Figure 1 (spheres, rainbow, N blue to C red):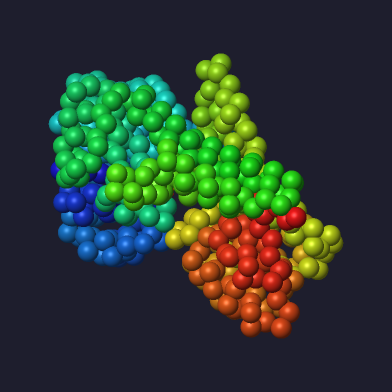
Figure 2: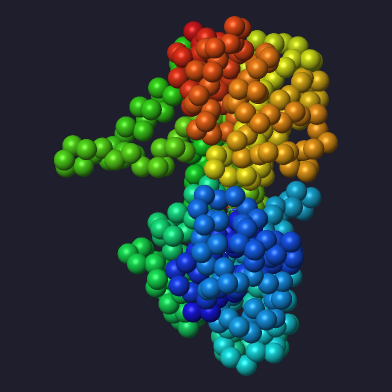
Length: 449
Ligand SMILES: NC(=O)c1ccc[n+]([C@@H]2O[C@H](COP(=O)([O-])OP(=O)(O)OC[C@H]3O[C@@H](n4cnc5c(N)ncnc54)[C@H](O)[C@@H]3O)[C@@H](O)[C@H]2O)c1
């Protein structure tokens, strides 16, 4: 099938490249010509494991990129909208300006198209957006009628940054909504190249809600684990990793098969304490759902608490640091990790940001190492942070190390620290190290006796 993907960020680019790999003819569209030039040169503007290889394999074969939206619409049968849907802190609601603008623009192109076209929202949008914002905008700017001249669908994306290619190529489920049977039939056809996966066809509103409910559940598990962790520290004598480890063994969480073998589902990784969730999805999506609930006169106190706990969680590391160093001025601190999670270069809502901000305000001296960053992102370049190029470098001559991102390379820490004459304090924000292998160790949820 001929597909255009509008917006080539994490979701749009991965979707476009993977759909091309699956055999569709794909045109990626973005308004940023620098991104488009890079894509056409076979260089991925973002880091995702395996993405660049698939890009170089498919570009100029079944994949192309352009800033020309009209050409893309005229030469495709289905358009996937994958523009950003940030949360607007001022209005305290999802910001649909990019969705509205792109819907208007696509409608303008449909005005000059004689054949049927399906427009599908892949961005995460609050329930009702596809039918009540996108569809009317398309009708208004195209002068055509939805259901007759074009269709409208909704196809939420569940990929996880860091595993995006694998998640897209081998999805756990494919959900799509459609305004009518013709729309969902076309989506079935688009995804028919994905064999043996559960496909859920529903209406647009339900598809939108499935995405929010899914993200909110996982965010809730994380904040729940963190709340328990903080209580363990307050009580003392309890290590949360023992608590959550035993919880994982509940057979309703990790079922035991008839063979006696136990399955450990991936969901257990969300039932672990840490310094909070970040990224471009969980924080903004949970906040958008809360705001949506308020608008629908249905407050969401559980999700409110999830966000409150999460906003405080990075500061648990500062609290542990102050336990050992009440005065932070001139303290030499190494921060391990800038990306909000491993295997990505996405720093949006990373817990490292509030931690670094607090340390800078307290006049601590900060060194930072993240294996994906050779330079600090522009928005951090004005901050007084020294970026190191190796783990050895960042831990040399510091008073304390704050481990924030679960990069596997940080497992080398105990070995490297053992070589130092005066090893610094280590505060493990992800509980990824063995506490017995480090002389001066603190961790989230480690309630000391
Ligand atoms: N990042 C994730 O892991 C993830 C996972 C699932 C769902 N989502 C959702 O997918 C959507 C996109 O997220 P993202 O992280 O890929 O966003 P992003 O900000 O990385 O990318 C959005 C892209 O859209 C482009 N764009 C904006 N307006 C445009 C227009 N009018 N015409 C052409 N291009 C335009 C921007 O230039 C940018 O390249 C969001 O709704 C997000 O919530 C993201």
